[in-house]
Length: 428
Image 1: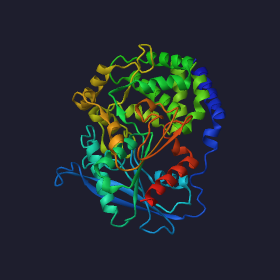
Image 2: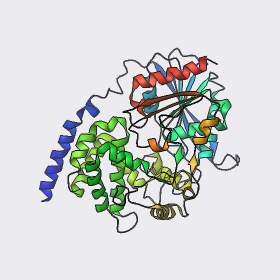
Image 3: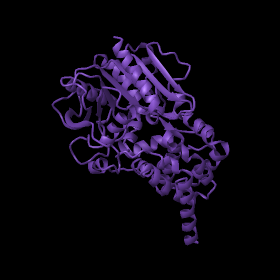
Image 4: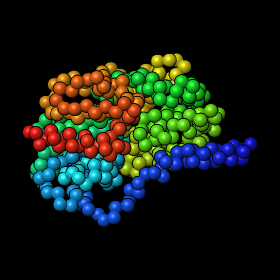
């Protein structure tokens, strides 16, 4: 029986490859630069672990700068806020290629504290209490102040998803550091439990597929906290998020819907293959990091438990845990379940369960021009800026069929947005 199951999984995986070939085969070769027409500079900036105590422990924040050939030091700067992940040269090059060579700008990216290589000194990262929004904003301010000595041109600040929320906070707190901001699919409401995501998943995948996935989730009810079933259920939820959220994975939807007919364990086996092929194993790493009680610095730096700090942020101040209003829904954990998980991982009740982080009021008072972009199929739309919202100082790019951060995979849209940002600078 096991051999038959293995053969069936292999057959189904091959079917996925054939159905979704365009999701990978049509991707341009990222290493196909005929000639290097830029230079990348790496810097490490020492930041206080707590900016209120500059003489205390420190962390090394990794910063990268891409300067296209012929672009002067006083050119406009496009400053990419790091998200809940590590940053590599490829992230910077992706932006450069997305915009094309028609823009004479300098690109800067700063890795978010607590992710990748930007960690505090010491081995233990199990409770990364230094990873706080206010501290990350202060880091970005220090980066801007330091680099403006070398690159004094006008600074544009860009953030995607959680990074979009950060740039709104940054522009409000440090308005002298920035001329215009890009907030792409920036969530502006962060309730402890988010029910809107579940509703959009049902809409995107269809009611029948949604119900099959809900049964799979129910079949993975854990016996005890963070057991194998818990981790597999978290993995299942992460794969669902990937297929419904990211533009680059939307071509997998037909295969995903069809495969959901499989028995739960068979479905999971194929999903693991799918995750490795199309997601570089990210969904499984997310699941494992979300249940890791002990995390070493090298496990974060090597990408093994890079998502652990995000789980800490969710518990400590951000919230955003996915939940279903329907008792038979997909995300069946409740308020108390998440509180228990936070206590088990980080030793305290989650502060995010008490107060809600939000940027919505900033939209009304922000003096800095805002370029906001999102898609009508974005699962985070219910907690983002609604399509009918009138931005007083800036412009809204709404893509009705777009997913989360639609400009990240649409060069034409990305160039329109950048042109709009530069126009705001030139008009001053």
